[in-house]
Image (cartoon, rainbow, N blue to C red):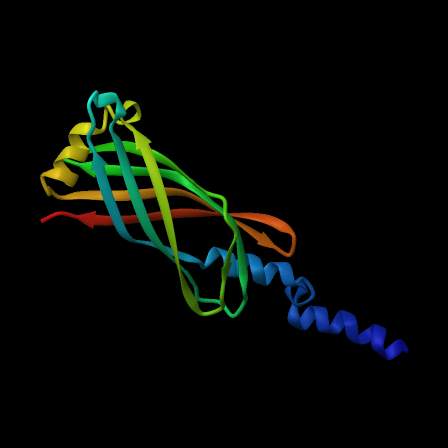
Length: 167
């Protein structure tokens, strides 16, 4: 029995404490996640009076898990921006609270539908019109966080993705 107790410190010295703590491997896997903004499908619904108009955005994200571990996403949150003509406009908040399983070594598509009222778009209307209606170049940007569940412990991972559109 004494030999076993002598082997444990030797094993820890050789391998490190990470071997005994699986949460470390999960945290590292969470940090290696890659998120891309694959598609942005805006649909501007004009109505009269103008304050009843809406912008509907369908965002298609891909979350790539390059690790060998299955990860669980609790939520995705952040803000959607539109960069056009040297200006950056905040368009909407993104709050995707549905759970999501990320298979090992796989890409998982995520579709998020947003609806934004005209009153919230007054400042961004010029940029939206230029990109959505006139087809000018612009850059849709998503900045936020992925909230993961790592062995029952919440872990936040920064999220930054963008999609260039236009001519």
